[in-house]
Length: 161
Image 1 (cartoon, rainbow, N blue to C red):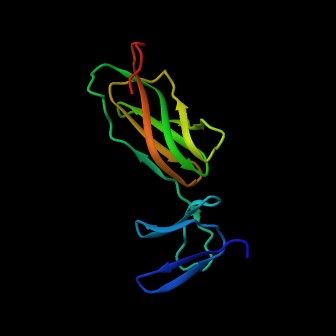
Image 2: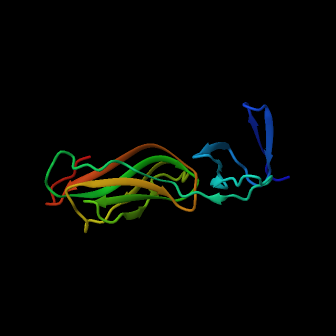
Image 3: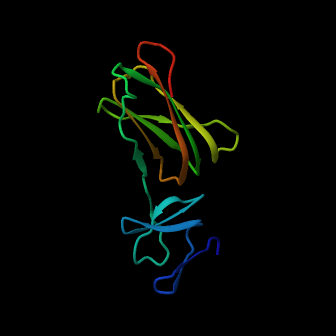
């Protein structure tokens, strides 16, 4: 047996054994059982399957839009995330309710799984309001500690965070 995960359900005092993935955590999201781990990422466990193959879950979150209290147009120079991940993450930026632009986060340290990752953003886009988000690629597992956005006035003056 290559992998073994045992989950103990305290509500009914029953144990479940999963052997296909090396899960480090199990839970329920919107009524769907999910597992996460360094090899499988974030996986939906199919109900009724005694040894689930599951499917990767695309996770995405978006922060509320803001104009930083300034009416002038702005550009996002960089998105910096402090996170731990088992795969690739993307920063998402949207101006004035337009289309989302995706920028891959690249590690800032030699340890690819933990630490600071950043994404330089295109200077072609600008707007008064902007919104920032993150998404995992191919269902990778991640844990976010902090998110920093470096914004600059579209006029070319130095940026503010």
